[in-house]
Length: 180
Image (cartoon, rainbow, N blue to C red; front, side):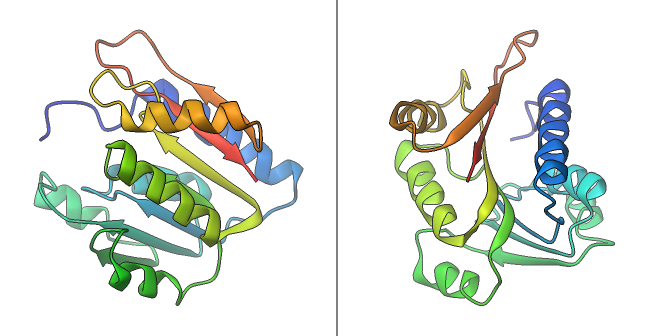
């Protein structure tokens, strides 16, 4: 709706630093990036500017993308495939099967628990053995789906995780990283 920041500056910088360290330490090249929840493409543009992925796939239901200038600007100058739809639909799942596994998957789509859990389970199937899956809004004061899933992920202790939430703004977001 355009009434809040898309990302906290401190959180996205922390996330990108953690991502670069992990990829460097494990000698992983930035190749394929999946973003669930493209919206106007601002987060996608920031991540691509730093990581320069060879191929990017983004999924969004495309409702209320905000400024069309921002949207079209964030489609330019990168190899991006935009899939318009919902990750629970077979069309979207079939389109994703056409691509190689992803090094990075950033989940910031539907924010109710059922959607976030679906996106995470789908991401596990689309990831490599050394992929990073990031979840946005893990401590959001506006929605509880990502937070509920994040607490479940931590509790299982099946994955190495890291999290960061900047608390200096009125609205809290938080980014959680799952290292496979």
